[in-house]
Image (tube, rainbow, N blue to C red; front, side, top):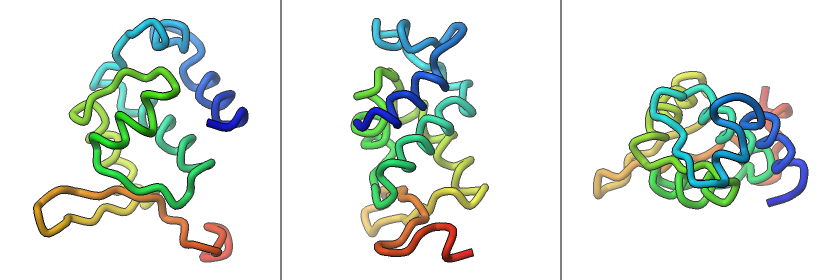
Length: 114
């Protein structure tokens, strides 16, 4: 993960009960903390705008490397909230699994599409 994303993650999780230090020690981010998970997902997408994954993949590949211990069930409410706010896309695949992705398109800045 690039330094800027790591710094943003540290700012988001850097204070209080869910500090980065406790996350790195294996603490779980509680399911009720949808806002912090949403912010962490958006921080990841800021540096990986074309990323796409399932809720399980988001928990494992987007958040876990930064120290957040969240399960797919933990991140699903945050993902759905981001979809409702227009920050993520959600596509239901033929097998019923959901694929979440940022709203960026290859070669097109999110600001240029507005």
